[in-house]
Length: 140
Image (cartoon, rainbow, N blue to C red; front, top):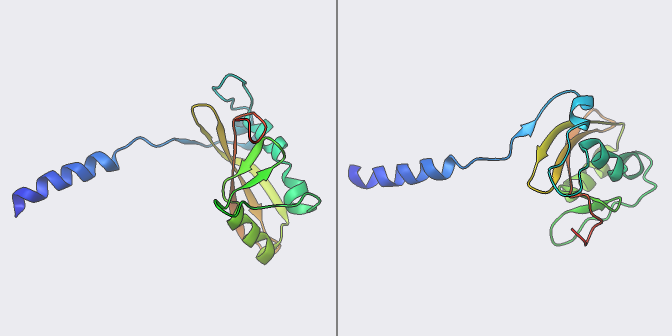
C-alpha cells in the first residue's frame, strides 16, 4: 500500500508546482505604469481608464451587461470585467461609494489583468478583475 502512495504524491507535487502568473503589488502610481508585453504596448493605467469605472459603478450612466454564459462583462470597448456577475450582485446589494486602484497587476503573454477595489456604501469591498489586450472587444 505504501508503494502505491509514492507515485500519487509525486504526481500531486508536480501538478501543485505549476507556475502561476505573479500578481505585482505596489502603489497605484507604480502599478499604473506597468506596461504590457504585446505588440501594442499599453499600461495598467490605460486599462483602468478604458474601463471607465466611475461611469459603470458610481454614476451608473453606462449599463453593466453581464454575459449570460460566462459571467463576464464588457467595460468600455477595450476591457473585460472577468467577475462581472459577482460585481453586478455586489452593486445591487451594496452600491458603490469608492473605487480604488489599481491594487494588483498580472502580466499575461499578450494582455494585462488589473485589479481594482470597489467599496460599497456599507463598507463592504470587492476586487474587480479587469483584462485587456489593447484591442476592441471581438477583435482580440
